Amino acid sequence: MDGYNADNPAHRTRVARLATATAGRAADRWDCGAPRGTAPRTVPLPTGDDESVDPGRAKGTCAGVPGRGGTSRVWESPRGDSPREQCALGGVWEPSSVLDAYYGPYAEDMRRRLEGEQPVQAVLYAASALCPDTDEPALYVLHSTHSTLSAADARATLTAFARRSATAHGCDAPTQPERPDPPEPGRG
Image (cartoon, rainbow, N blue to C red; front, side, top):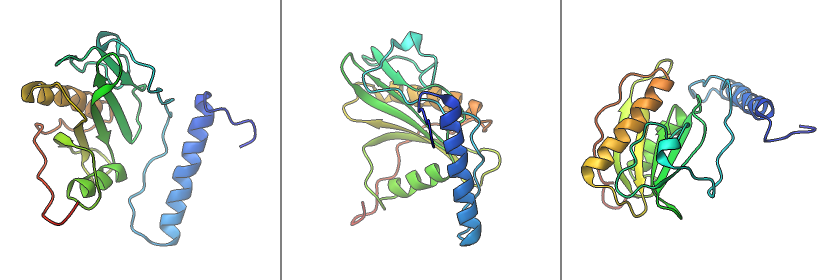
């Protein structure tokens, strides 16, 4: 795109709409049976790894997520209708836990990963919610690299994140967070 500027939300949205339409036409042409997504209304600008805020000042994907277990900083992107959302929690220097929301094909892909078909970083807890216009339930997970959250705090943190994301996407209330089943032996 001539004159493309990733800082311009209109440019990002046009590229995302083009990609969505192209994928839909490809699915129709090759009859792959993939569910059709809807074109995004906006595409938030990702937040850089060095751009963190105090948990109480979060306004995007981390807003309303309790800062527990030594969480003094969060890394977030603006809340939108994106098919994948993320909120990272941690100390001053780096995230120790990451909350992810997956919708549509992203949820389907992450479920395959959790079933051991592909490697995935440590998932402490997962929850799901039924959403309109899709047969694939949304999936919410709490990943951890070196979490300082207790089990109760981890569940409360994922619950707050999942509820807010599900509401923003028009989904039903999420299930209670549970530990995912480990992959079968010899898989993953």
